Amino acid sequence: MTRSLWRDSLLAVLSGNAIHFLLIEPRLPERFRHHAFQLDPGLWIDFMICFLAFAVIRWFRRPLDQ
Image: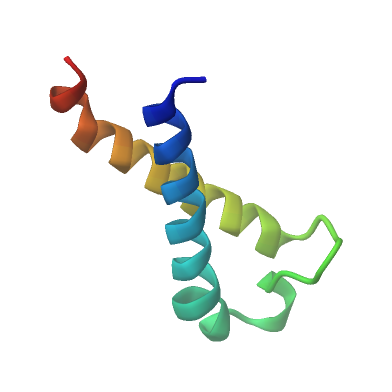
């Protein structure tokens, strides 16, 4: 894995988790919140936010990588 891909992945996970746990999860109903060490809807919501953050980061960096 290249340094830029690793850096983008780390940035996506950190920013995605910050968005999820600080902004979104407090507003979710209890059944959609993440509970530690469980596969639940909250974990999937967190994953999708991190995935979207990664896609946005890579989309903005694409012109710079060429």
